Image (cartoon, rainbow, N blue to C red; front, side, top):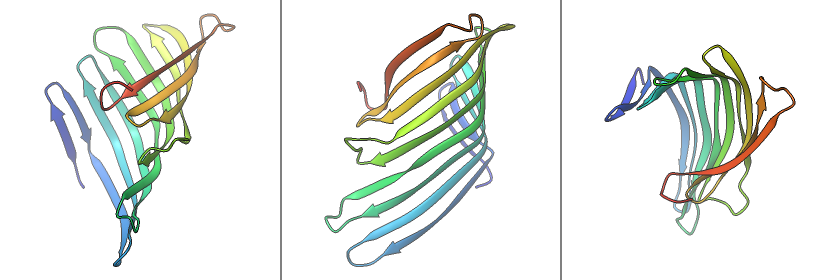
Length: 168
């Protein structure tokens, strides 16, 4: 796909190049497919900022069992992410992630990781973030730590959730 743009009000996602590959199998009992998506130079504009992701990839499998239920599992990966807020001099850089997904969600989801190597406020280096991400039935739960660059012995822990369908 040579170019893709999705917009809703001031928010938008622009993908200058999207590569989609896959194969499918179908017989009387089973539907199966493998897929691979590669999005290059993705730009995400939100109300108060902008994110850039040079390489975003998704790989996985889609199956329909004999009970006709659709199941999917795979992994999302991104590298080289950066971003900035428009109203504050906050920037991030060196973001990368590796996040497994599954549908329907599992009781024991796989562990993913998200790293942000550089967080700055103006010219001040604030440090880095390392977090663990797990899928829930409605979104994701995460926990991690911030390693301060201002006070190298200071590590702050955090946790929370993000929901696609309301409360997580």
